[in-house]
Image (cartoon, rainbow, N blue to C red; front, side, top):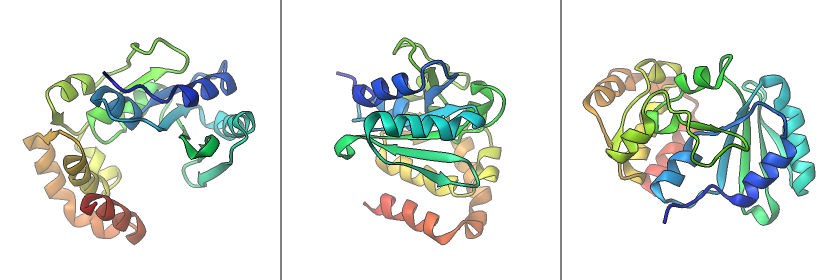
Length: 197
């Protein structure tokens, strides 16, 4: 049976963010479709709403809400007993489709509207089909230019998930691998630690 994104997390998010044009996306939907347990939920919403939404959610669940990144404007809320966490981040672009176009891999470039039907899916890059075909495919070669750490994320996803990268993705990553030296050492270490684990 397919795992579902944590009902407790979704209920809390839906109540706290009622009326906000928010979408659930990223790894939560990927893992849900792969039947993996989901306790880490990503929510994208307009930048001006992130801080207030995070504080409202933290207050509603009586859990900590804190800023993850001043540079990117992301916040995290931890649920009761650390059973789940929600990361709230500003939309990258004007719409959810713009945001998804800036993701790393197609399987992470899916979303559904908050409070919408659990089967409703915004999937402009074919991530659901790639999951069915067990394929790991970049959204665009620029994904590795935007964040060179994604070269290591490719290796991590291959080690963690039942997915095989396509040749274009491997070639694009190989061409940009040298730029990993531009990435902060702690980010590289965190990815390598997960690959080894």
